[in-house]
Image 1 (cartoon, rainbow, N blue to C red):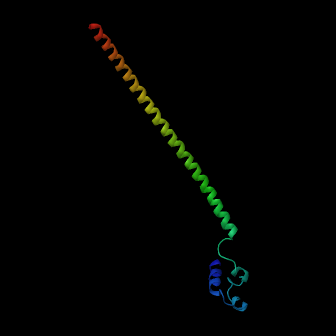
Image 2 (cartoon, rainbow, N blue to C red):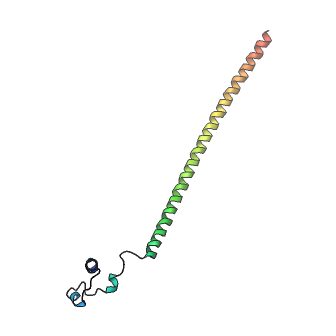
Length: 113
């Protein structure tokens, strides 16, 4: 029935058809002229409301995704900093041991003179 109404709207735009010609078809017999002027789709308020709802939903999804990504990146940075700290600590211990060994060797050489 809606397809018939759409076809009728397209066919009668800008033309005048007497009411008697509509009485032949049962599908179009209840068609009112007020519906012919109604724009297809929703009103501006409905479209604006749907747009705002879509923006709100996608904004929320985007915020949650971005927040999760930031926390994952922060955890990765913290893990890298911890690994770097461990490397520096191990290197410092190795250098301290070498320095102590060199001082002991130098002290031993000075005693021999």
